[in-house]
Image (cartoon, rainbow, N blue to C red; front, side, top):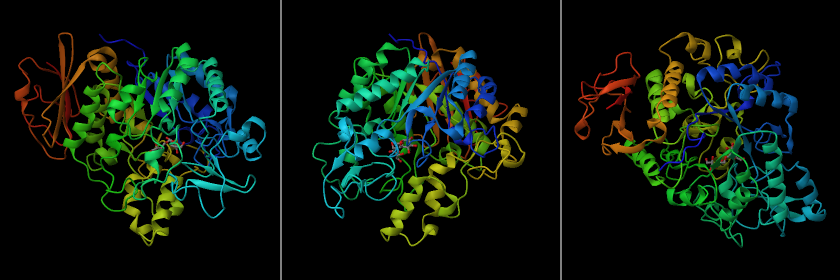
Length: 557
Ligand code: TEU
C-alpha cells in the first residue's frame, strides 16, 4: 500500500536567486526578476519551487549566512516582493519551499552579537570553547578551508564554524536555540509557504567532548559532526512541535547518509522528514582524498552509479521516499559531469529521462532544462565560491600544489561556481540576465545555449523536459511504480522497469558515447510501444536495433 502525497507527485525546480533573473539592472538576480519568470516556470510544468536563501545576509556564502531570518536581502527586494512571488506561484498552483539554514547563522546575526558579549540567555547560543589564542580546541577543518575554529577577540574564546568563519554553528544542545528555530519556522509557515529544504542538517549534533578527527579526511573531524548522537531527537522535535501541524513537505540535505540511516530519519515512524538528499552518487567521481583532491577526480563507472541509485530505490521501499537529483547550486553542471559536452543535447535529454522516470521526487536545477554546461575558470580571481577558493588555498598552503594551474582541472570539473553563472535567457548581451554588469560572469556559451532558442526549437532539451514532466503527471506508474533494475553489469546501458498494478514501463538509457544494443532477455517486448525518445525516431521496440550515443527511450510493455 502506497500513501499518496502531493509532494510525491511533484516535480521540483530549484532557483538560485542571485543568478536567476535581474529586474533592476544592478547585476544581481532578485525577487521581482523571479516574478517575471513565473509564467516561464508554469510553461515548463513544474509543481514546486525551492528557493535558495533570500534572507538578509552579508553574503559571505551567498545567503547561507543569515543575519535576519525574518527579513529579505536588500539586493533581492522587499518582503512585499516576496509576498507577490508567493501569490503569483500559488495562483498557478505552484508551491513554494523555502531554505531553512539553522545549523549556523551569520556572525552578524543579533544572536551572535549578544553571544560574544555573553548577554543573558544568548551566552550559550553557539559552540564556544575557552583556550589560548594560538591553540584551537581540536583539529577540525572547515568546509571553506582552514580551521573550523576562530578565536573571537570580543569574548576571548574560540567558536566553532563548520563552514566559513562568518557562519558560526548554533548550539543545538541549548533548548532556547531550538525554541527560537521552531518559532522562525512557524513564522514562515504561517505566511503560507509549502515546506522547507533543510540545509546541512546532518551536522546539527556534534560528538560529545569534541574529539580530534582523522587528519586524512576532508574536512577533518567530519566523523564527529555528521549524524551526531542527538540528531534524531532534534529532528523529531521540529516535527512534533511544528511541522506535523502543517501540510508541507520537507527535504533534508544530509551528506554521507547510508540508506538504512535515512530510513530512520524518514516518515512519521522515524524522525518525521519527508525526503533526504543523500550524496552517494556525488562522491563517485571524487579523488581518493575527496572532492578537492587534485589527483584522480572525474572517474566514475555506470555500473557503480546504477548500484548506488538502485540501492536507494529498493532500500527505501516501504520505508521512505527518495529525492532524486543530479545537480544543484553546490555541484557542477549535470551535462558536463554525468553526460558529455560533446553530445550535449543527447546526453542532457538522457539525464532528463532518468530524473523524470526513476522513483522519487525529481529536483531540477535552473539551467539544466536548457543543458547549461560547466564554465571555464582561469584563476582564483575568476571564482566566487568560498569552498572552491578555500580548498585551493589549503592545497597551496599545505605544499600539495604550487599554484592554481595545478588545481585548474579539478576546479573546472567540480567547482560549485559552475552552477552559479547567470541563467541564460536569450542571445542578447549578458544572456538577458541583466541590463547591468552581472555579479558573476555569464558563461560564454549563451549565444547558443539559451531559453529563447530552446523554446523555438521543438526538438530542444527544454521541450524534452516538458514532455517528460507531462508524461510523469499523466501516468502514476512513474510516480508510484515499483523499480526494478535490469542488466546491473552492463557498462553502457542503464535499464529499469517501473510497475504499478498491471502496468509496466521500461526505461532504456544508453549512457555512453557509443552505439550499443539493449539485450532484452529479461523483458518481453512483443507489445512494446515507445512513449518518449531522445532522438526523432526512437527504436519502435527496445530490442529492434542499436541505441545511438546517449539515446534514451521509454516504453510501455
Ligand atoms: O551545503 C552543505 C554542504 O556543503 C555539505 O553538505 C556537503 O558535504 C559539501 O557540499 C560537500 O562537498 C549547504 C548549502 O547547500 C551550501 O550552499 C552552503 O554553503 C552550506 O550548506 C552552508 O550553509
